[in-house]
Length: 521
Image 1 (cartoon, rainbow, N blue to C red):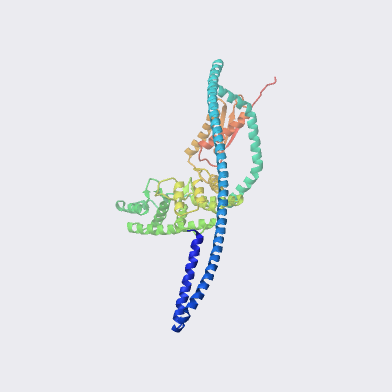
Image 2 (image 1 turned 60 degrees about the vertical axis):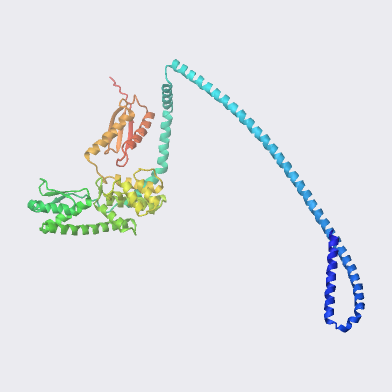
């Protein structure tokens, strides 16, 4: 059945149902007496049904036509979309095909190029091999003809080149030195002088002695006590060794710990003043002296921090800084050296625009590791570990680690810490060294000259100004003016390598003198 027929049947069934319903309704409402008019009503209903049927057919026909028209439109739209999609698909397929063809052509071209490159590389390797072979043959012929090896010829060429450029190099060196002096000397002088002016301390460094003066010789026996009980009690309480030698009027106190030695010295002086030298009294006075000394060291640490403007430090660090009071390095008081260096570093940092706080802390704690005696390691390693425990800034820790150039400088602040330490430690009178160390250093300076220049070229060597200046007299027949300039630089460079720790700086002067003597008769 087609759509039109189905629609028509549906309309007819709906109409019949409607009229049946109306009929039943009328039967309920109309009394029995109107049954006589039934034939008339049926006839009227038939006429009405026929007209409604005709109208329904007409509407059904219109609906069918509209449905056909709408179906045609939908079909046409779908066909248009399919046609357009097919057209787009064909265009896309064509583009893909073109791209594949282009890719195939490029792949073929790349393969051809790779093949050509491989061929050229093979040819190039072959040619290089031939060139190396020819080069080796020619070199062998040259060596046989010149009766020199490759290294010997190279040495001769370098020697001739150095000789030709010697005058020019010496000239460049002198020009560079002159330019550096002009641009940097004034500023450097101002910075260093200002720093040393501000860093000058207002007291003379102390030097702790381990000898205690006695009132009389009988005091030695009282200090020893019966069967040596007093001296044993004193050594156990103080942790130092007491040596009663043959020196009249003195007792020697020996200990690696300067703080213990200081406490022992004060305790012994108090015991002698009190006169009651016995084990119980010894323990009492030593303990009292220790408490007083710890209080004094804390006060010294606080004074040091206040003098350089550092506050709010942990008490443990202040106590350790106070121990500098009894610590000496190369005969220089550590508390004096630290105060002096910190002041110098602060002024240099201000002049150069560096971080003053970093320089201040680095200078203050650069030698803190020298106080730590119950751990293994250098004073730099111990100091760095201590600062890490107290969470100091990384730049401060790096400056402490680099203040002896054990590691490369990582910041300007590290360099300033190193410079301030060098200025404070190398100024006249700051440190002292033994006679043997002094002689060994001067001898090493002279030996360095002979090793660099050669004994055949050196006439004499003089170390003057306590080894701070080397005057080298060279033979004029073996050394010219240009070479003399280069030799001074080489000697100074070698001294920096061989002499790790030397006071201040060493000035190297190479002297070449030519004399022409004639006598008139």
